[in-house]
Image 1 (cartoon, rainbow, N blue to C red):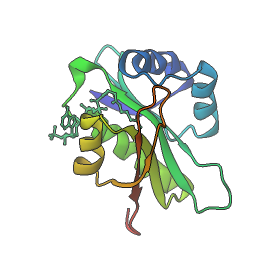
Image 2 (image 1 turned 45 degrees about the horizontal axis):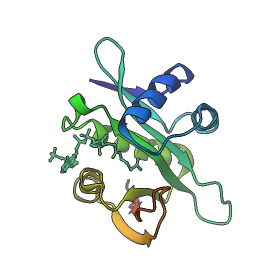
Image 3 (image 1 turned 120 degrees about the vertical axis):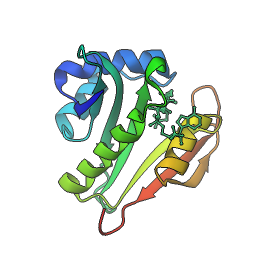
Image 4 (image 1 turned 60 degrees about the vertical axis):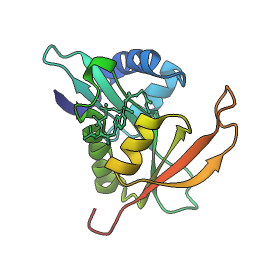
Length: 155
Ligand code: ACO
């Protein structure tokens, strides 16, 4: 499976994967906003026929008062393609790009408290830490963990 930078032409496939995989969905305009504003930060995993089987939609925080930091808006992999290391690779690509292009000091994301697979990916495989618990963050009232990965100088 190939991992490559997402293009405008990939956005519908990313949105489709997101709709299949997660209850947190976004307007097409929001995908476009990511791709036009931070084109280096979003990636797709594609099968040999070129179909999108996973994606990471990522951005930089826009608050100029704080040091530059990246944010993962959404990441998911279609069910038959899970546990192949794709999310791990997608995240590492986005992390590298955040440092290379925007000098990111750290990266943040939100995850449902009940999402054991994603929490294990972030904490155990990638080294993120929980830095906050946000009560009732999601539309259905579930709490979120705010997670953070701080880049070391060499990252
Ligand atoms: N159970 C336990 N640990 C897991 C699981 C799981 N089901 N899935 C991944 N992990 C951990 C393991 O440590 C794994 O390493 P290992 O396979 O060597 O044990 C490591 O994460 C890397 O796994 P990947 O194969 O890279 O992960 P995958 O490509 O399967 O994608 C993901 C993981 C994105 C969470 C996938 O299960 C998915 O799409 N889930 C539905 C959507 C979702 O929950 N997305 C995250 C929402 S939060 C957000 O978007 C910011």
